Length: 85
Image (cartoon, rainbow, N blue to C red; front, side, top):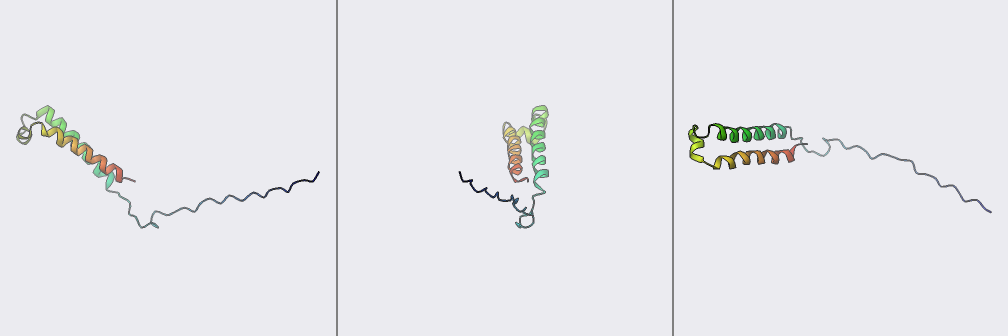
């Protein structure tokens, strides 16, 4: 019985690495500090509202809108989180 030819395996060549600067895109180094700043400001706003909201003049005038402002700052921090690489 005739013997079949052995198959030649192709050599593995890993894909070439792309450099970060080759794409022309600038890294968003400001995104992480801005994200943390928004989160901490939002947390502080809500905390101060619950602890001393009736004694702070601006917070007393805003009433329940303070919750929306604090949560809005926290949500805005998540927007910055999507830009962080």
